[in-house]
Length: 316
Image 1 (cartoon, rainbow, N blue to C red):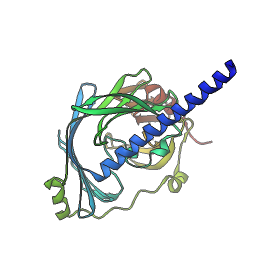
Image 2 (image 1 turned 90 degrees about the vertical axis):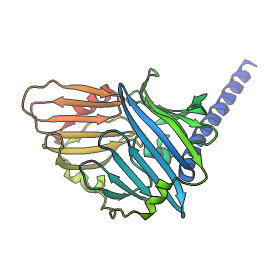
Image 3 (image 1 turned 30 degrees about the horizontal axis):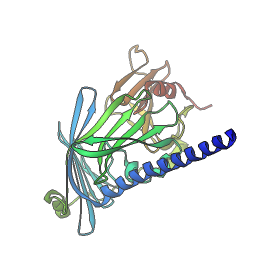
Image 4 (image 1 turned 180 degrees about the horizontal axis):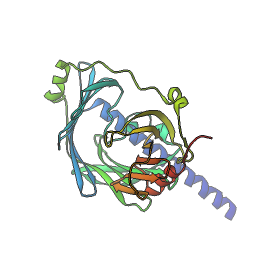
């Protein structure tokens, strides 16, 4: 009898766990669908420690075209425009450029509006509690990293509109390191006039995409000996850094949710100890050797960035 009870307990626990997984995934899929088909005008802030960045986010459908506008409201400003699969970036002190992409590269990870199934190998989808965000009912969905080398990512989704209300990078102790919080959102039947005006604007023609990893890996001068589970090389090249105009080998890795950049360059003058700087969830770790310097940048723990930097070696 005891054995039967144990078997039944395991069975029903598995059923509950499976239902929770499906529900959490379905909520994320509903959110992606809502962002794709709804007309909305939203404002949000990204909070990193004592720093705060305000954004305005517009989305709509007109003449069978999907329109999106993301604007950074502080400083010199940043504007990103999407018309269907053409995304144009207007950045300070740079010429505008257009690329082919189904989504905008901004504070919200693009994968959340695309194929979330790709995250399942490295993250568990878990339902959290319910609450209120911007005076709207919200359901928490947690993307829990399957190892301690990465942060977790939590999302609060509007239970009525299925739109995103809040998101945060969270460490293994449950502490919110960096938050994206909507301050207002209006869902309407028609897109706002500012989006309609995009159809009358001229944008640069899409540029040729950068060579992918398989096409550039032959140019690799370094071996990155260790990476957290699930990270793959997206691209690599050699270019001068804006900060110091020094030539560096550059590698971009991603697990689908988080990107990690690795820069390798000749040692800069002066003796500087290796170490990390953090801002919100972002870590910059610089590893100094007598022969070369390695910098690792990404939304990852400092210990992870350190391990990556120290694993970089010249190929044998």
